Amino acid sequence: MARARWPLWLCAACVHPTGQLPQTTLAPSSSSSTLQAHIVRELHAAGGWVPFDRFMALALYTPGLGYYANDLVKFGAMPDSGSDFVTAPELSPWFGRTLARQIGQALQATSTHEVWEFGAGTGALAQQVLQQLAHDGLTEVRYHIVDVSGTLRARQQATLAAFADRVTWEDRLPERLEGVLVGNEVLDAMPVQLLYRRQGVWHERGVALANAAYPADDTPAEASPFVWQDRPTELRPPIAIDGPQDYLTEIHPQAEAFVRTLAERWTRGAAFFIDYGFPEAEYYHPQRHMGTLMCHRAHRSDDDPLADVGDKDITAHVNFTGVALAAQDAGLQVLGYASQGRFLINAGLLELAHDAPLAERAHLAKLVNEHEMGEFFKVLAFAPMPSADGWVPLGFVRGDRTHTL
Image (cartoon, rainbow, N blue to C red; front, top):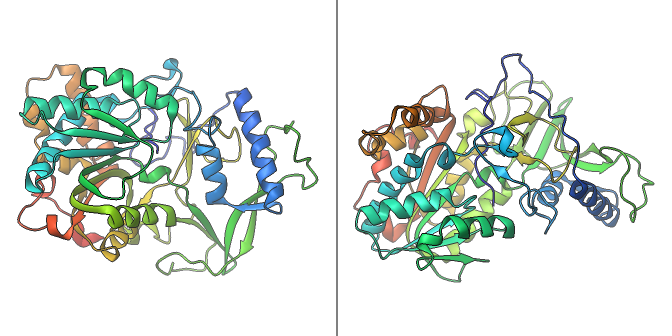
């Protein structure tokens, strides 16, 4: 799984002051060339075309080569660290400590004793949560991490050495699952399908070879051997999009399938997913005609996922309505939906960080301010029906926006 993407220059509107995304000009790595060759072979095997969700999965998760499976740094506060973006737990330890307050309440309300984190990045969030849970007297909680990256797992183990007796790493979900589930921006890195309406006709956008005769067993020589190719499709966005204009957007079957898989195995607890995105009516607004797909490298962004595969992140905003409906259809109850800023304030961020140094308070402001991460990021919570009644999560006691989904 992946983590939050927050290039340092990026504002909440996702628009550079020039109106353009600043382009990354770093040279591709040797692993990128190897991954390109691997994807070329996949394309040949598939008849020369794959839908974008398959390409995105290969670019991010091919063992040893994909962006989240290789040894690139990825996470860090400054570009000179070799990182690509900063995440909320790296930005401020009070993010995880505040989330821990919500987790602690949920553990007690649902009579569970385990936390499951998906896509734990550097382990910073897990460390902050475990520190705060211990401070609040919840010292018997078991912490499980589900992460596809072996390189990140090693980094997580080093970060969490002080909690080695309480943390376990899982390669897959158990058949029966209990506890509080946490996903700090994992949904946005799940592969998406691209739909493009051109002159009133819907197409699925996929990836083909720039040169169809390219040998399947050679390493591509050019910067990118891949091109976009659209095919007519019966697929549609979940709601009709007004207007005759050409329109590019995403649909999220893998994120919705992930929620359904959780529902099949999860018997008790609560889940909190934090990500950037919109409710459906905003996601498929007629003016959002270029979609939300973005790439991140060296704290800069671009909109070309076909270049430098494996060297940069690929992400799309989350359709929170689609995720919430998938949860409900699978028998789960939505507990709340709010902006990250409101959620953190409700859960006690300001009280916890009351005596924080001035420099740390500046970072806190980024977490909650509406023109930064506070509004851009949202929190969606749901639970199995037996765990949903009789309590209101701290993060949603004020400012709940479930009615907007």
